[in-house]
Image (cartoon, rainbow, N blue to C red):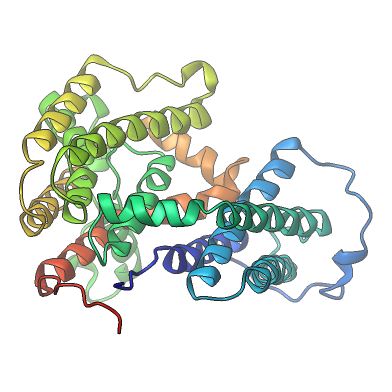
Length: 375
């Protein structure tokens, strides 16, 4: 039978990169520690700790263990070797991150974090092993073959990362990719005092009041934020009723993730603050447009996704600043969400641009050749 590519290896590498970023953020003021880098391994139980830190350190490595196990199994490694390899990878990665945290004054190396990370890796690897033993992996592969086309791993990775991108606070629901103002302001600061100082002006729309954003622009942002992942899904999925299910799933996942993000930013009592009549209208428009476009060929879907993403990043770059939005970002950067800040921030900023690159390669690639039977 034709060999298919698995999305587990690229997801494992991406998740490892996110762990590195989240563990070493904010990367500033590196210095040689006054003690040996390994001394933290012998420290007693810390006097100050929170359940949030314990749970986040445990759960943060569960997906990594499961992904590494799945990647090794798909590389045809024996189940026992894959289990041991996944546990070793997670433990060594955590050991490296905790050791490097000794050199960052804003981070604290902890043997408790190391133990919880290793335990989370074990839990994730065992979950992967259980899925493999019960044959659910084969069932997933069969379902994937029915729902998605060959060589869909890149698109599936983007779809998996989309809800993670939504966890980072966005100016309006689903409006990911607001990185252009930051890049322009950073470049303007870097050129200040040089002969090229006037070449780049700081982003000016940050001084525009939030209520100056026209309602039509807000609706367009939200609708495009939903339409883009739907069209990416169409670009890697089979045509038919399944695409309508994918649209419904995108709506449900977008709403659920936005609710979680809002609860993290402003508290559980404000979890549904994003649920406004304008937002519901925008979601309905995005869902209806996506449903009407469900019959289009995959290459056309990729082109439409490219148009939607380009319009999204241009509109979101012009979204004015919101004082409450800025306050929520400050909470992420300085508060308890610092562990998630680096990971969710870069996924939220980079997701549309990674999707644009993927879609360009998809459009430029040749049509899939008929599968060859193995001899």
